[in-house]
Amino acid sequence: MVIYTIGFTRKSAEEFFGLLKKNDVKHLIDIRLNNSSQLAGFTKGSDLKYFLRELLGIGYIHDTKFSPTKEIIDSYKKKSISWSEYEEKFIQLLDERDIRKHVIENLYDVLDGCCLLCSEETAEKCHRRLVAEYIQRAFPDKEIRIVHI
Image (cartoon, rainbow, N blue to C red; front, side, top):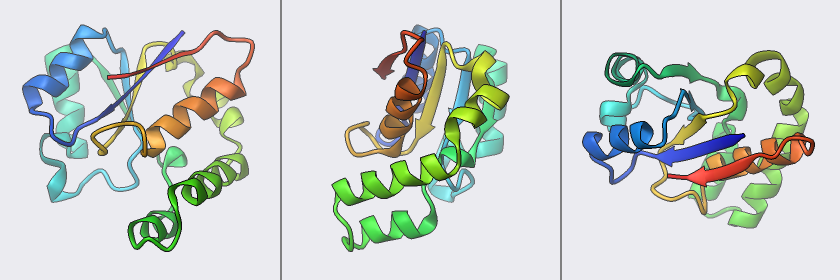
């Protein structure tokens, strides 16, 4: 089983959609808290859903259960908390939301070949990496490989 992650910052539409196509992504799971910002460009929620379906036949899901709260985001952006504190707070939030159960009940059938979307250019300090790793740990019986594209 493979879970991909991607960020759209500093990617052209051609590069973004090309990476999804090249990796044979089946469903894109948008895990941004706000997917309708003007800064999102071609990844604005309703437009992205259309582009994915029409250009590549990829399904689109916006799921804020995988999003950090505004408070966690703001605390990190304002440097009130470090990245390691952000990680701790976010993992605790995923635990509280019972993400394993959420995946089983709502996303298990689309997990293989899905791609988690956020805005950060790289996965290193992005919650999409934390979500992918959380899912990987939540299903130790599955061989889940994470690929950041």
